[in-house]
Length: 366
Image 1 (cartoon, one colour):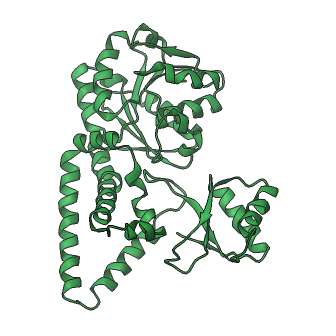
Image 2: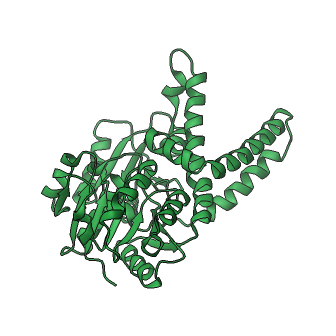
């Protein structure tokens, strides 16, 4: 089974990134897309990503070998109902939502179990929209497939091959298992990040000093709080039981930590940090999960004019592209004052090797 014609309902960050990846690996494929504001897809046509813009969910999707439902979780089910009358029995349906059980339930109600394989590329960005789509965000990311019990193994294998060709890592899970796992590693962390940001907001001085001095560590663990509020509310309302159960466990652990700290319980926090460090250090460093890896390093530079420009020039001369560069105003840990981010792991490694060969002191934050 080979997929040649692809349909997209919604073409935001993830849908757009998948479309770009498909165009890159299979330039001859035919790709069409529909969204509530199809005029926004003109750039995708101009860039050669889309062959056709569809102004409504219609017969145009009948010719598709595979259709990606890429709207927010809350509207994917509605779009699936609208799509059903126009489907070919040969079309494979998938989605990219981070909650799988609700859409599986809809698929069963509609009698589409032989055609559906849930999908969740565990990659992304705090940015949204097709303008920020990039096929590279799929590389080395786990891409979870949640097939129904009735879809053919041939279709699952074909989807796995497509995922692998896009540079991602396919992983097959049951939809309920998927929802529990993503609640723990993605949904609850987003809520925690939002709560931490609001904690500082609510306790900041009237001069905003906390905000002013918030440095690397706080920004790292709260970066995902900048994600789309509409998207994340939809996710929280779709995976409620798993999220609430895990939040209850987390709140209980925080209460235990609070009691130990208030009592000055010697050794408690040491064990806490030791155990968490050991487990965190065992995580694989290459695959990217739902919280995107930042490819960055810190460089000690002299406090004099031209130092930052010199680093940029050195990297540019070796054709190493910089994503972001800036001075760290609060050195909350003993690392360099210049923070440099790159688009990929290879560029980061090349930059570190180059700068160290020129006697710069470079630090990595794991």
